[in-house]
Length: 138
Image (tube, rainbow, N blue to C red; front, top):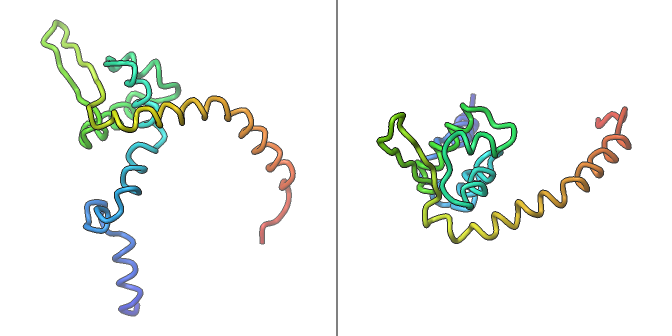
């Protein structure tokens, strides 16, 4: 393999913590809040602190494992706090931090738009799929 190809391969597999990630904060933030579950969790937490089981019930289709991983990632990035209360049994609540306040309104507006536009998007997708069924893209 030539040096040139090796260099390109090395760039493509650079870790997310590499300096290049810091140079593009928009991409990093969109990846953080724009994944399948994070935005839904943040919108749900916009109404106030929630326990794990409340979030699990509110975010349709999420598994316990994905909820756990998403909450850990949001906490790691400073968007969510996890508070453990020394009750018996222990009670844990999740809440958004002040960092999310600036984006709460646009995020909730996006969630509202998604609810309204969902049927139109599904109709368009169905029409497209029907019109392209059986066609060979090559």
